[in-house]
Image 1 (spheres, rainbow, N blue to C red):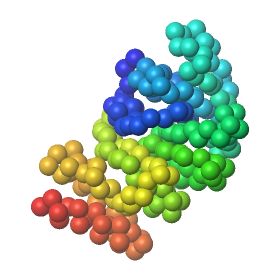
Image 2: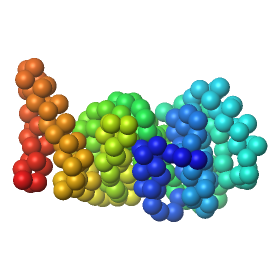
Image 3: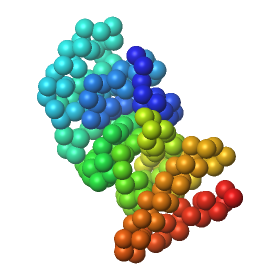
Image 4: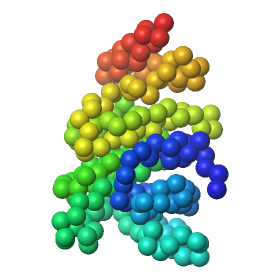
Length: 226
């Protein structure tokens, strides 16, 4: 199965031992199926709120070679998800990775916040790849008590994305404009930085003075690369 550059980058960023990996808003389940192949030690959960999607996916997986013990399909709203699985009754602590990709920044933040609120005693990692509003997302997850694990700039179909790995167990500060993901010796990264600067320059020119600090943060990255 061939993944898009965006999904393949997310797959490559799954670094660590997880008991449960959740492909949230899974759609066709391509990423989750790739995880089944790449991470045989983890149980993979496919979650989507659309029943027709989950029914079709469950039927496909049931006819596959994957053991039913290794996967589970959930037709559920992520913002109502409870991670208290039966094993927790025996005081076994399970580590979860939730992947949220392909949705807008506001919804991504709402989802992460809801999962944390409903599962306060769980060790949870998030691998998020929002479609827009990256600065807002980064600032928001920072206030939720998450720390940075890893981050990467991804170009896919002419668009740039940021894949960000976060954890309740990390105390590494989340940079508002990104940090270790930048390699400004690369032309793609320079172009992505120019796009961000141009975007906030336009907003400021339209009278939005609230973006002055954000623009300055991106400009400082450009100055470092000079």
